[in-house]
Image 1: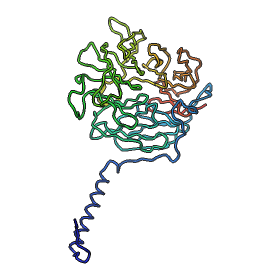
Image 2: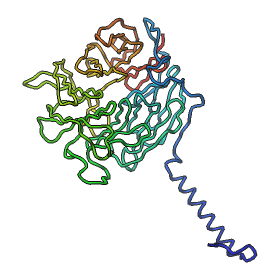
Image 3: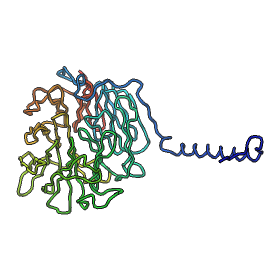
Image 4: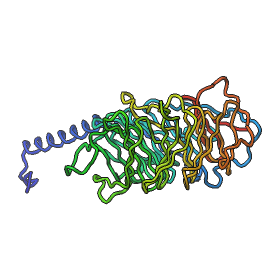
Length: 422
């Protein structure tokens, strides 16, 4: 179809009409850009990528010679509830801005700021990307992953979600948790499973227990374990589910357990889950190890005062956010008073570190555990402290999260990041 006559037949009116159409198109395109979220994005990728270390325990990423005393080498700010350090970097969140800092110097390597509230961060052990989940018009359903070393875009997803979520991370999956719903994603941010109330169901009756509310969830390998309140004040439902069912909107149950109402998840392996059960009038506090085969073992354990920990999701305060660390076959849980060390080959065997003030990190076969005097080197098999490295925290007495990134020890003390060196 010809919109204008041949040049020899065009009139002044034809040219004016064409000019108006072109101007209108330019105005629409410019208006769309100026009002879009993309126009507001501040994204600076790395001039020089971070060191090529695949994880916090890869060769070259560990501290090979620890001195008797460590001192502050740099400080920064991190307002997130989860310290993330990998590939020679450490993540800093300030308001709506996410920055990757060089763990050896604290200098910014790359940053991203969408000027929208951040719902949470995830960085599964086997991924080389950082996932940032944002709050938008659809809830906390927009996720963007970035290459850790460079800050380059990797993958995105945008879907309906709850207004407030807690982000999940296992060794090979990320996802979100809200009282109504749990979902997991693989590394390209494609959803592998959704459990609970579906925001936009394609088929009815695909979900069970939709009347229940989630209180915690953990994932490892191809296992997703959830804890739910279903209206009975004396009971709670623990579900073992496949992390990758045939259809993502049709969860596949491996086994279900009924446990005391106060129980919450504190650990998970490829075929087991650990729950902590607070003391009652009849029974003392205990850890129960549940197996996907349907068996379970109950082991008495010291009371965790202040349990369960609340999640950091604004108005939703009925989610449990266990303070855990997992690396290889090691899994630890900090209950606010002590550190419990599990072996993922068999969760039935665990040790306690009574003086801990945080989760710790695996380094050169030892577990580095923050303690009031500094950092304890602990044998993860026995739970015995081999020595304590002195650290002056300038009067800070709260919880400490500790990680190692490319040979650099980093602590999170409240909202302060601290790089430590000899």
